[in-house]
Amino acid sequence: MEILFDEIPSLDLADFTSGTPEQKHNFVKKLGEAYQNIGFVAIKNHGLSQDLQDRLYQSIKSFFALSDEIKSKYERPEIGYQRGYTGKGKEHAKGRNTGDLKEFYHVGQELELIPDSDSIKSEYPANLWPEEIPNFKQDAIEAYQTLENAGKAMLRAIALHLELEEDYFEDKVAYGNSILRQIHYFPIENPDEVPADAVRAAEHGDINLITLLMGASADGLQVLRKDGKWIPITALPDQLVVNVGDMLERLTNKKLKSTIHRVVNPPRELMHTSRFSIPFFMHPRSEMDLTCLESCIDESHPKLFSDATAGEFLEERLRELGLRK
Ligand SMILES: O=C(O)CCC(=O)C(=O)O
Ligand SMILES: [Fe+2]
Image (cartoon, rainbow, N blue to C red; front, side):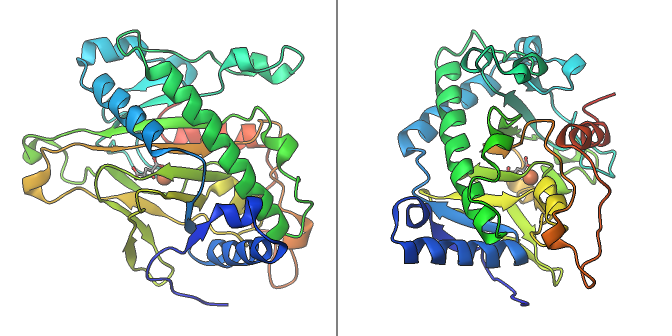
């Protein structure tokens, strides 16, 4: 069914997690409809409190206000910047060379929380915690866990929409390679000093299964509708934006859409202002097989992707983004 949304659909996650069978059914139906079309929804009752979001934004504002010299102590190119700080302009979208106008900080699974018996533990680098910002660690870990739980609930709904067992993704995302990315789109005093084609975040699809995005500190996020129109996204304060990433698109042979999105620059007179945002990229364990589901392949939907594991696909994309040599 062709639907052209003027805004992304809003859903209540509580309908799915604690609603009546009918509410749960309707949630899955609306989610499936949205993900087969615009690839984005906004959800409320996700479990992440406003207080925690405020604390997170406070910590990252303090962190990014530190000098470049201090921030670079937390930069680890040798692990593809998968933990800690990534400096200004280092990442560019796939297919581009001009770096995005952003700096960011990555938090992954906290190793102490993974049981020793799980061999995945040895795959992950340890998190880095900035000693200059006392609450950073505690707030980031709490947000990571809350978003991981909300993501698991979304994946249960997605599994039902795909007519899989509700717990299909459960073991695949247990201690998965998810990343909390805290982003600062930095102020630019003189717009003529940056490359003419430089933008806050050039158009891209996310790599992972799904992305859960907290309300940002300013406008700018836009998604590309299939008729070519860019639709601005503004989440209400109590909402998270949740979109399909490339891994889920591959698994479902493009039944679910990883929609291209971007963050545009503000008008020239506001280029000197900052924008902060915090996406949570929900990744499975590296061994997850992303081979297209048989149920998503038929004569009118031939298989579009070669077989790969999540780990293989991620490595390829990190090289394409300039983060891995
Ligand atoms: O900053 C935002 O609002 C979105 C960022 C984004 O799309 C990303 O980091 O993948
Ligand atoms: Fe994105």
